[in-house]
Image (cartoon, rainbow, N blue to C red; front, side, top):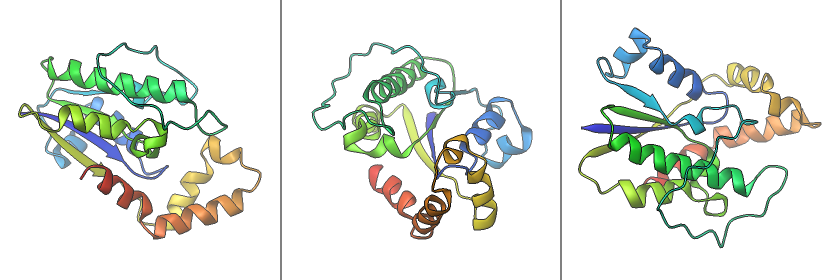
Length: 188
């Protein structure tokens, strides 16, 4: 049976690194996940650099964007719609391919109604199919100090003038497991 795997986790938990290891055929990683001998592909739009934008792929799905947030410094409607369209069309193409596993790098935005509700639309179209299994992996870095060091290296984090306060808030959210709870709730 085909498998679609969503990879979630706070920033700096290794989602893209894991995807790249799987795509490059890293033997240990494939064995750890029991993916050896499988043809693995990734939804390209979810692993590209944030500054890149792939062309929107037209799809035949119906969306209600009446509650979508207006553009601001942290959110762009067109980019969110593009991401959603690419995920939906990549999933459909995957189901019609000879590949075994599709990897999707999830983002917090994917589970929010005001940011495109990508997971909701994905599940409503693919969850009840009997030709695909949907798995959700939530990656974590256990050590706060290591995680903080990894966050501090992120370009988007370096742009904050109040880095200490942002880090404090991110650590508080991390300790409360809010991200994990939101992801689990979105896939119920």
